[in-house]
Each structure stands twice: as C-alpha cells, then as structure tokens.
Length: 190
Image 1: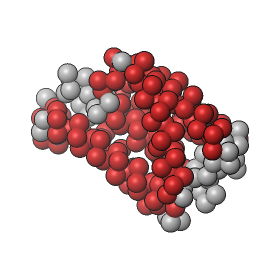
Image 2: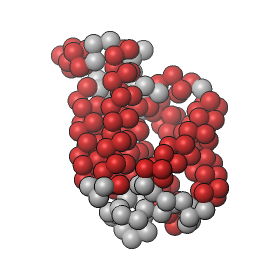
Image 3: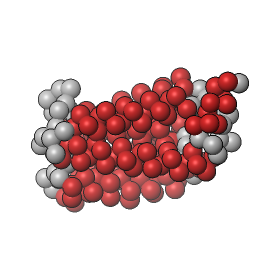
Image 4: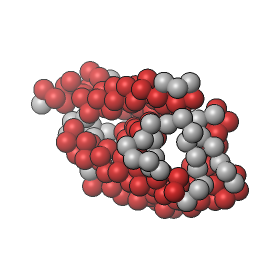
C-alpha cells in the first residue's frame, strides 16, 4: 500500500503520468541523439538511466517493468545491429560493445522506449494493427530525424527507410504484446 501511495505522489493522476512519461521519453531521445552528435554520448546514456530509474521507482511492480525494459533493450540491440550489419544504417561516432554492433546510446533509446509501453502508449496494446502502421511510418521518421541531426547516416536512404519501416512494423506490436505480459502499472493505470 505504501508503494502505491508513493506512485500516486510521483504521478498525481493518470493524465499527468501519461504526459510526463511521453515528455521524459522525448527529452531522453534528444539527449541521446544530440549527445551522440556532439561526441558526448555519455550525456544521453546518463539521462536515459535517470529516466529509466524514475520510471522503475514509480512503478507499482518495478520488477515487471525492469524485465520489459531488459527484453526491449535486447530486441533493440539485435535489430539495430542487424541494420548496421546489413549496411542500412551507419553510426560514425558511436561507442559500441562490439565492433559492427549497435551503439550504446541507441540501445538506451530502446530501453527508454520500453518505459512508454505501459504508460503513454498503453492504449496501443489493444490495437496491434494500428501499432504496426505507426511503426511502419513513425520508425523511419524518427530515424530520419536522427539523420537530419547528424547522429546516424543512411548509405542508401530508400533501402534504409524500407528496412526500418518493416522492422518497426513487426517490432512495435511485438513489444506491445510483451508489455501486456510485463505490466508493472496494471494496478495504477487501469
């Protein structure tokens, strides 16, 4: 009961929690992308860790959310590495765990994205076809924003946008299904 009271204090209402969740994700996205652009990826990584930490601290069931975040980070790392190895995306100034793999800041974006699945993107969990459509369109737009800011490069723009769109059309509904299974906000955001 004390944890649920603390959750209510951290996000006074559902609307406030949803808006704050979306705003924090966007702030984290810019911190990661602009940090990478300016050679300070660690700034974005620290921001992402702080956002994820706050998310977990405010979740009624933080273990479930932590599992979702970990699974999404792994899925994102695999997808991003596939994009790099396939020659669709290039990260010129990024620190990676392994040569030819996704950069750490990009994996952190996936971890932060997971924090939205049971909060600001919660309603999409029941509309998987819409989620696929949004992934098909929104995924490439987000990456293109990263290209325009200078964080990533597309060796072949058309091929990259198609690969990213197809990947996100599959991954968006998949991670939303995971979110149903690992819902740490089930008691707070009904």
